[in-house]
Image (spheres, rainbow, N blue to C red):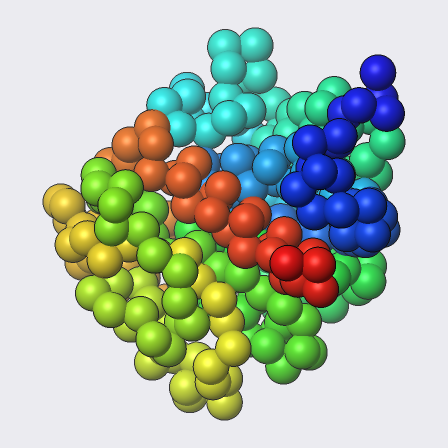
Length: 247
């Protein structure tokens, strides 16, 4: 049975690429509506090791868009629930769940496990800036999600370098702040060209540069399908990078 688990991937990528995926290690920072789906896609794609980083627990408001949010998981740590889900999908996978908020104090420790790529699925600007800056300066491939909240049009989702995005408030904030830190092109992002509905854009701008706190995130309206599409697209970009020699 387990020999057949990734048989369709072998047909798609070839045996060598599949072996490379099995030896790859990916960190997913932020296990919410975007990060949960990204982590699951990687587990279903034979990636051998995942590091899952998030400080939060599953809440009722997560149920409309987060793959691990169920009645039976409410109140549990998102990283632990997601780790169990990934191992149920791919029993041979090695998963390290870390219940922590990514910060300057723990950045070196959290990214010290020899990962091949990092998925930035954080939804606070200050932590997002820190993660992108840290990865970029280390030469560690980082794939970042821009704002999925306040969006309803799946056809407006796009992939680009952070410095080539258009009509994305969050990307504009990040470019401005990252330039001050000496960071330039080289960060692949998933974003939407659709304008942000409601007060999402204003809240994101207000948060930029403020002292960070895990509980100071703005509350934004979010659909059941845009965050998953962001996460799946991010996972696809990582898989392309890990298998690109065979594509």
